[in-house]
Image (cartoon, rainbow, N blue to C red; front, side, top):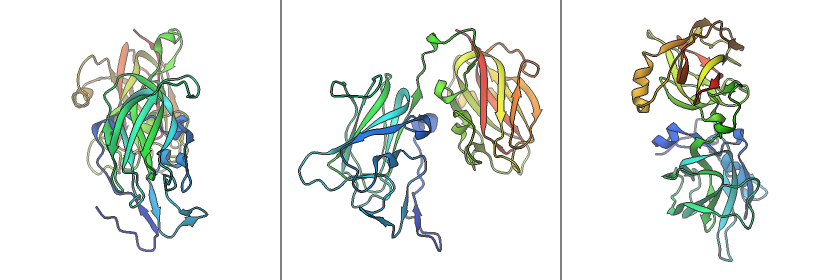
Length: 346
């Protein structure tokens, strides 16, 4: 697919792409917002390795050069003349089970690596010469300016990744999709835990619309930094309301809820409600249908702009243990963060 420049612009965006199921269902463990970073690389002459972890989609800026040559939005090494190949070691932002990879060479045409492989390890601290690496992607062919999706069938938890490119070249973005891992057995059962948090295993299951925002930002740490850091739907022109379903990282009895409309001022929801259930079986698709009939955990509450809304036992209905919630917004709009706190249940 060819992408044309907007009139008067010299910035070429990446081509749109249809994501595989593992990328739609799981979060990027190599997200810098979680603390992911490049620990080392063999070379980054043309473009720094850290750039390939950026959350933004890669762009190509026509006519932009720096001291090392053409500016590229990604990691690019120099041309090898002495054999060998390049690699980069990355610390994942969240330890987790890797479900799939995207090695994206967008805008790298005559300078992409013909092949790549990926190794992983689980260590406390920084990998060293004694670290045992496990290959999860044998050397696979890469092409010009394209996403390369690879599913991973491995249930072990990893903390670091080593990307090999053969022999050299450029990678625009690396995405490591997976499920964060947390040791719930070590947690205090008497304390309240944010069981919806992404870093605690929370997961966005489904949503009916996300025209302006990114749903997984709902369960990110911290407050949103701007209006783009949250979930926002299009303006609804028909009856009904918008919704988003979250699987909790652990079954819990909910005692506190936060709905944060930070930065949403002319476009916050008029009101919100939350349904919940204890689901023991079913697919993501069947859960979407089930959720329509779940009991109400938080009855409909009015919201205001750019504010943290907190609800406790006075508003929350005692449904007992739950592991899924559905956030309903009426009729549409944007929510920056959703937080569900509860006491753990085995």
